[in-house]
Length: 114
Length: 113
Image 1: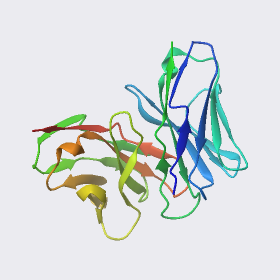
Image 2: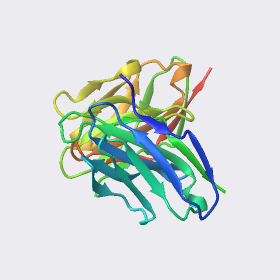
Image 3: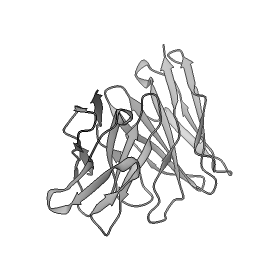
Image 4: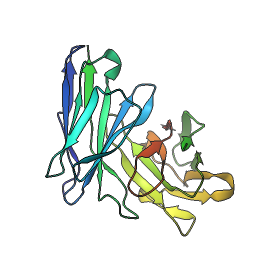
């Protein structure tokens, strides 16, 4: 069974540009989560999508947004990039509201803003 | 608000020695508890999880963790570490099966030959 996949592996952008990161969940999983792992800030929850809807959002500005498609894959968009957006962005998926299901993480997308 | 504290930023142990990584959480009820491991440049791999029942949980790679409600702790242990265990370890809490995970700040484990 294929795990969570993310693309691209690395992304280099210039300050002010937009970045789009993609995530494909494990087959059968309906929930997708996005986390940011920035140097010195640890792992922070960004967004949670389930069944195509945004369910929860972390403490991030509105320029961080995303969506979930009918096939449950997801896209994270970061507008007006700032230097501090440089981080590893991790996507995770789960079955959703089912007791005992943990989140399975992808390998991440390394975003570098110059 | 939920929080997770990993008091040790960096630990170095000798290969073959025992290991204990500390984790304390703050939450009103009993949350779901996890330990994840992250090797350099990699994503997160689940080592073990606690939802209910037996407070001693066995995980992969020979790791175990014990949930102690009275101490709000969920410490990770391994009786004998291997050089391949060198990585960053994250304790995490989740308030239900379908919600965000709150991670601790992580403990970096180095192995002394």
